[in-house]
Length: 224
Image (cartoon, rainbow, N blue to C red):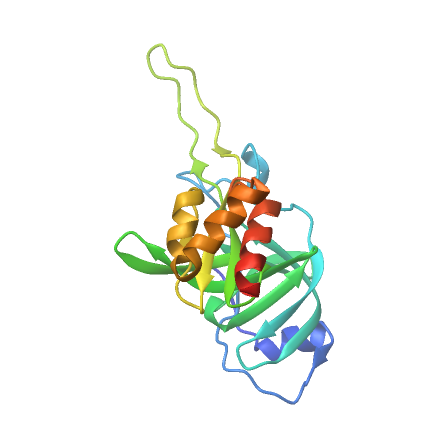
């Protein structure tokens, strides 16, 4: 994998840095986009797409040192869980992920946050939907399937990315985000206001399967 040994200041100068005097401690910020599968396939050779939006969107990146980079071309790769940055018509990963405090582009806000995973925790990019005492997030993912040759009665299968899956998570008081699988699970997470939330969901006939309903529930909880 090719490393471009440029400081983050170069990115910020290129993209109209605010507070340009601030030095950052990033190292090897950009890495060339990797190919996929056993045969190092390029994106154009694979069915489907790993991107939430294929086209780059002009956005802003806020770093963990509160340096702001404006007019950055960004897109989100759901397969690799990376934000890609475009410079001179070449795509790179914006790393380290932990130094990205917030990224806004395409009408969305992304944060890199911890979440509950099995018996432990992990970290991933989330789209921030509601921010407050409890915060609501959307997580996007897709899987890559390598191409398979014909075997017996089975036809050859092309390399492909699966459809993008969207799941919702919630974090209370900045705790690790927890996946919302159904109404009961959400009420369990918001346990300190359980009766109020149950009543609100029932009265309003809301469902966690609908993003607008989820926003209403979380916003209501934050108002209590």
